[in-house]
Image (cartoon, rainbow, N blue to C red):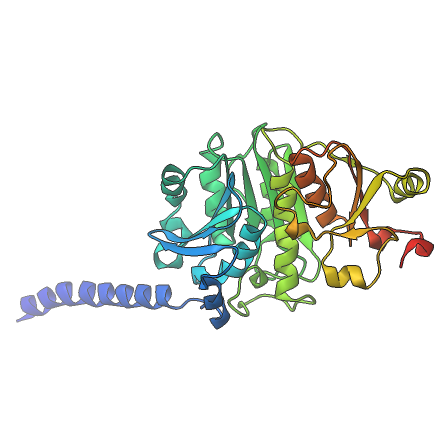
Length: 351
């Protein structure tokens, strides 16, 4: 009798333990952050960006033809939560692949970028990810530096070397991020290539890169989710638009004082305000025409002469650099970027 009891215990205890582990695992992978309901609107057909479901996730096919970004979602976040961010990026000419990870955990699908790059043909490939997805994107990039042009880390950090003369990294995080380990971010700087940019979005947090609500442990934001994502897209475009065959696209940065002198002394110039039209209407430099940065996709009709001197500005200097890079990439020979209207000291020239 005693032997039978011991035998049953040897069978029963491991069985109960295995069942417990199975149940705990099932609960863990099914306890995740869900996308906001409004992300479904991005599947509409009559839009500039075609959103297509593919075997590995979602393909956002925009007007761009040469550059693409593969995106790894954060841990335990429904992958469609990043559709708004990537849709805006695709609108600006960078097609995007949003990867659906097994069990919403990027470490279970770290090598999915390989399948995408084999199946689709683009001149330039970039990898990106949020939180754990960013860490896995960094790990993959470290082993595939020759296959990629750059990496975008959203609230994430690398643990392996990304050093290469032909590789770029931009790291973006919010000032109110209560989840990201900033000590790890500091340690990760030693792995970065020479072409490395770090951007802290003032007032942003960990969760606002996606549309999945509040995240446990995060801090209170002072900006909207839309603003955080807008600044993120601007930072990404700043990196990809200044890279062409490994060389910086040619445009010239000048000061507001130099720009004013040109305006005062030269006649055959164009002044471009690349803010949105509603921003332009609140006040702009006299003589400037409104040509929003996001509308600069093909060669603008307003700029027929590619040898003409073009002075470009925006609100703070981010969009103007993106616009200037795009114009230079299109073959405009004399593009001068002079920052944002916030730093323009000549009030008498504002109308």
